[in-house]
Amino acid sequence: MDGMSWEDRDGARWIRLAGELDNPAITDMRARFDETVDRSGDDIVVDMDGVTFVTSVAVGMLIDTKERLKDTGRRLRLTGINSKVRNAFSMMALGDVFEEL
Image 1 (cartoon, helix red, strand yellow):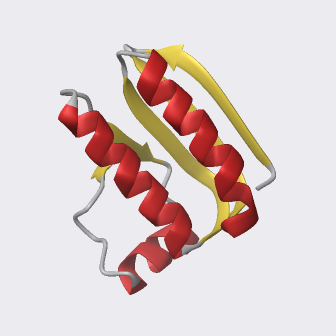
Image 2 (image 1 turned 90 degrees about the vertical axis):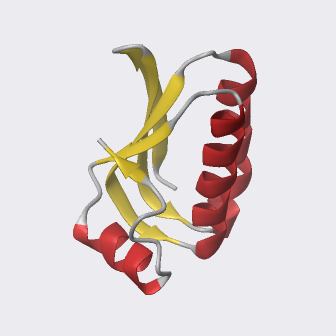
């Protein structure tokens, strides 16, 4: 993964991801997402516009985060889903799993 940044705006924690969401990147990504879920009472919006590749492990982490947020009445929403990410989601039959902003 080339980068991850976040900011609080519009009542949510916005996380911008860039580069390849491959297995080596997941450890840092999971730690950041877990910290946000545990310490913030906000929804999470993930900007995927800069993502060039996504593995099923990364998608699984996003689904886990979505479920953890749902258990506390919060939401995970995705934005900036580019054609590479959309194609990966389609191949994994995830068309309706994530809420898009």
